[in-house]
Amino acid sequence: MREQTAGKSGLSWRAKLINPVLNKEFRLRMRTPRSMWTLFFYLFAIGLMALSAIYLTQVISGSGRAFDPETSKVLFIFLSFAQLGLIAFMGPGLTAGVVSGEREKQTLNLLLTTQQSSTTIILSKLASSLSFMVLIVISTIPVYSMVFLYGGISPRQLLLVFLFYIFMMLVLGSFGIMFSTLFKRTMISVIVTYGITLFMFAGTALLFFVMVGVMQELSPNATNSWIGHILAWNPAAALYSILDPEVSQQVYNYRSMGGSAPKKPLLTLWQEFIVIYSVLSALALWTAIRKLRPRLKR
Amino acid sequence: MTTNKSTIEEMNGDNAAAAPSERAAAVPMIEIKGLAKQFGSFHALKGIDLTIAKGTVFGFVGPNGAGKSTTMSILATLMAPTSGYAKVDGIDVTKQPHEVRKRIGYMPDFFGVYDQFKTVEYLHFYGASYGIPKAEREQLIPQLLELVNLSDKKDAYVDTLSRGMKQRLCLARCLVHDPELLILDEPASGLDPRARIEMREILRELKSMGKTIIISSHILPELAEMVDEIGVIEHGQMIAQGNVADIQNRMRVKRFLHIRFLDREDEAEAFLRDRPYVNRLLRDERGIQVHFGGQDEEQSELLHDLIGAGFKLVSYSEAQTNLEDVFLEITKGGDGAQ
Image (cartoon, rainbow over all chains, first blue to last red; front, side, top):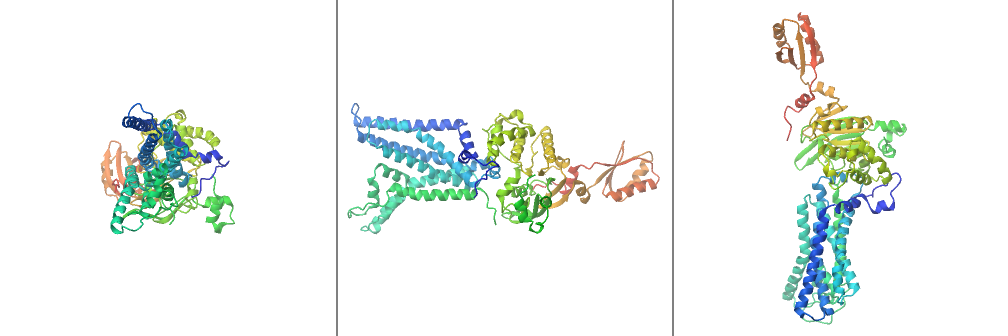
């Protein structure tokens, strides 16, 4: 759809970058106490988990001993998964109501009769939700810095993990916005988005293990490397492949019974994950843009 | 009033030689032909035709569920018709919705507001949504607030405004891009009498500014004083369209005649009772009230007969027919709810 046309004097680059919907979302998001509480509880949860993990590792390894890099790596992995879990919990909650919520508040029709294109509206909604999530996740960096005190983690890994989070938010955000556009009621949209998220985490893992079992029964001697690709649909497995690069090789070269020397896979688990979900997110956003306004042409 | 010349030229290829102003005048603001809308097995609109000239204030009347809001939603590009077409300023709403949106200001019957906005910010948001540059908005918004009497509330949060104020704010929002056509769906519903009067005053001012306005109501008298034409819709069909007086005549609405006699009132009552078109008589200290079923001609004949029979009349007058009576008559007396 055509982007909004400029007024008489044309729109400046700033006006194009910060369009009205995005501007509104930024402004209104910070006017509600809810944002403050979301940030507070998120940081509280992640901080509590970090402190508990440090406490537990000290209890296990005995008090008074130095904190070794290997333990801090375990702590980092733990924190990374905890954060992924929190994102999976927060993403659908923040995005699955952005369109249906406007519909329920009866503000959507007013927005749809303006000159803003469906693309602008949907992408602005996504950008504003993402920016809030990014703000929250970035605000957890000091918690991660505790891990740096003890070493064992490369800055590249940390950066990759955070980029992975942003991608994950984009994916969940796109799904949330699509369901929010497709379903009239926020409640249903939220439930479906959480359902999809649950499937991404638990469903794909379950499918992987079931397929491992089934293929072991059916063809015990064959190389069933395709089974490994099921895990490329799983965010937790993808994250783990960033933290421990060897896991991709192990998964793709899975053999039911022993086998020859493993080959180097074309893409690692997280790279394949990004390819798959980039396509799915793009499809979700495309659907949302198409379905925001009723189809008028016959 | 601005007109998209290129579009009009496309629509009126035959009149290419005519002057642009003539062509602009020739294109009605709203042209609806055979417009039908079906929701499953429910026919919300059953092929309505409607033409509204530029600068007209058109009252769209009908009971709840008659199809007013559906028609308005189609005009506002929010819904596709099942068949037929609707054009705004010569542009088909389904083919060039983006162009139509530039020309319309739409106020739905139910709408929400972003509560955390201040009044000024609310208008800035919609102004920006129509691509109006900030500098222009800075000048425009105080004028709009002045028009809808909300200047003193410019920094108030929208959720602190009363219903009437929100309604007026929404009207200001409709005007932010200076549209030629205003589509107002029940703008006065749920307002107290004072708020209604304020709304009416604003609409009168908009009319004087030359806007074409289509305004719906299920309460006819609400519209009576300000509309040029009315269209009555029921069960998805236009059952009458024209100016208010025409419709009253066409619908054979009963007239109420007040007759005062100097004397012989008993005889006059008996005489009247036997006349055609006299449906009912009421007698009180002010004279005789006749519920009359005839038109102008029959009414004149009745006066002629009374004088011919030697009755001495003090006055013979037709009481102003309440538009509500017209409406009830047209919609067969029910509330029309489906």
